[in-house]
Length: 264
Figure: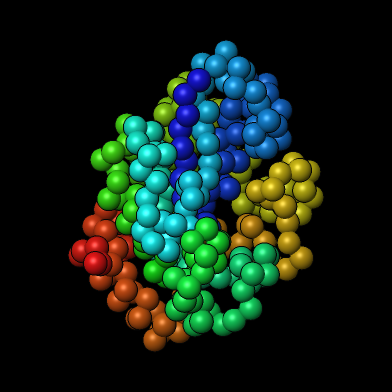
């Protein structure tokens, strides 16, 4: 059995993609959907099914990458990676609401979140991911280290909103899953925003990925749209954030405000 690492910064669409992928594999194999999502399917079953297991995470020791730009080269050398990226402005705002209203790990304003002193946090603390700079460190780290990987696919959340089936089909192909059109369509429908909200509210999957929240802003499934940062950032905040993105973000992600270079 092989492994495909599905990597994203928090609040970039990973839960959505993971639910679609698990649904497709569940329908194909008759494995229990909740067991797939909770990682309870034994390695031997993946091997017998000739499927390379998709492993969803934010990356091994990812806070170190976000704080210190320390990429885990030894862990990922020769690995196959499917990277899901999203507009850093939308990620920033969504991450702020999630940390403030779901995990209750942050109580300040969005202005203080943007400029959080992340370098003062422990190198393995999730708080080292707070702010705009850690998001860029994370994205740059994967762009700079893509050459050491055995396989690398970059997909954008914004494209997936337009054609989620295309993103799902590519990931399933990496996992050696022969998925036909009806299987893809079923998985996309199952992971629709309406059904994900229902699943989060009912908690019927008993899966941490959709464990629910008492507040709208703290829910895992929020707006599922592009440009949502416009509702939360002032014009001045937007200009400052975009200036940092233009200055620092790797050209691999040039669609997000046309980055020119990676900051020193």
